[in-house]
Image 1 (spheres, rainbow, N blue to C red):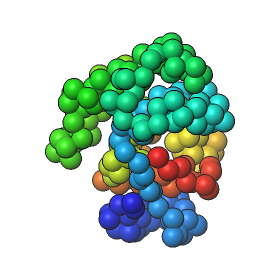
Image 2 (image 1 turned 90 degrees about the horizontal axis):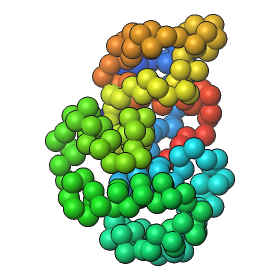
Image 3 (image 1 turned 180 degrees about the vertical axis):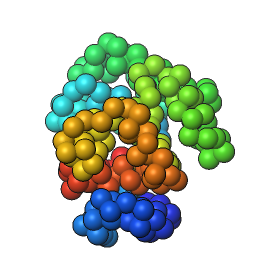
Image 4 (image 1 turned 60 degrees about the vertical axis):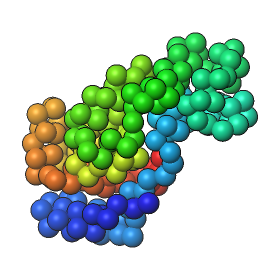
Length: 205
């Protein structure tokens, strides 16, 4: 699913910022895409933390064999030893189980998310063990398609801003915030284009 705001956001950013204007032209026809169930997306983000993409994919394939249908109930019903056997650390097993409990109990209720602000949703998600602010922000951008998220701690965004605006010098946090103010209300879209300048292949969650 591509967000309905994409064309307007791209046009607004192209007019407001020459750097983004060139990127919008360069990556015409491409857009942010959301795929997948929120629970599966968050589960997979925890699996992939602090390991290589290849290792994460391998663990995920084994997890799909052990837990045939990835749902909160099926994860909670699975023996911890079986989850460990997929290559997950004991701590990550605890994180996956905590996430499943939050969904199963209704503490994380997808039906309410559309009425929540970005900040409130990040706060709700980070109450789950293993989900930090960066992971929550990536979820808001890639799964929820929120248009105005600026992930200040993202290394890719920092690097792209350094390259395109500061002659390779990594900017301090306050400067990133200042750039973000110029991109409102489309900061997720600006971030996506800057990511593409580093890696043309879009990420899909």
